[in-house]
Length: 303
Image 1 (cartoon, rainbow, N blue to C red):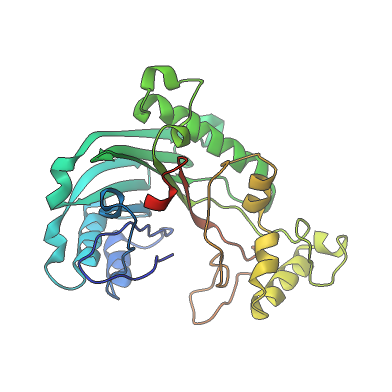
Image 2 (cartoon, one colour; image 1 turned 60 degrees about the vertical axis):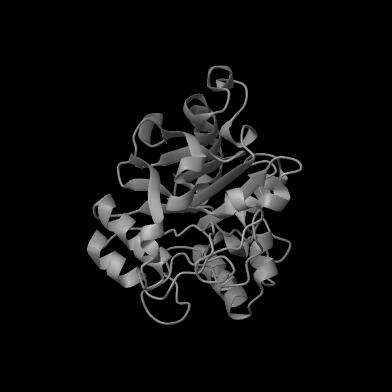
């Protein structure tokens, strides 16, 4: 999910999300071209930070070298960036990069992990968080991998709440007072939430269901075909209306006041490794990798 392009050499904030399966070196080589796109941010404080959430195999150092190469855009610009902080939980890895010229402006750097897997303690699912100040602007980045499968929407919502609450005690601005009071999203000027959130498209939730009765959509094959038809028709609005995360947010169940860009491209889950949008029959096509953000009142223009 790449942000709008800006002039080479400008700062920016971006997130690259992927699932593992290959070796770190193989994925690094696969993902390193084309040259990077960077976002033209608002305030200079926030615009010159970059973040990567990385899941999958391979040493973390391989990924960080890949990111620096992407920031360099094929030139020597990668040397202008440094790693500010890492956080890891099993195969999940989060690294924040900042321009070398701004490193001395970054302070109060903290990290935290939250394991939400089996029994609420296993690290195959969970979240990583890094917070810091860049000048006078406070930022938090939270990367997570939530429960899989269509019927686990409630579990995903609960994992988000657990991650927000657990990490607040370690990286929050008011760390001692944070436990049981303010979560991470409520303590920083800007909070970015991203990763393999695993929320699915469920046409039974949407206003449109490709002309099929709700009873028919209970059958996986019919549901899959209906979603695929909407993809082929490029009816992004119908898919958006049927998104579990969107419905959970509207109901006030998760990630209150977080914003997200409107999608105008096919779902990226779970595609076959071939040209075009071809999906595995076992899974409903969905938008699982997500990027959301939340800014404090009066600070939104600088995100």
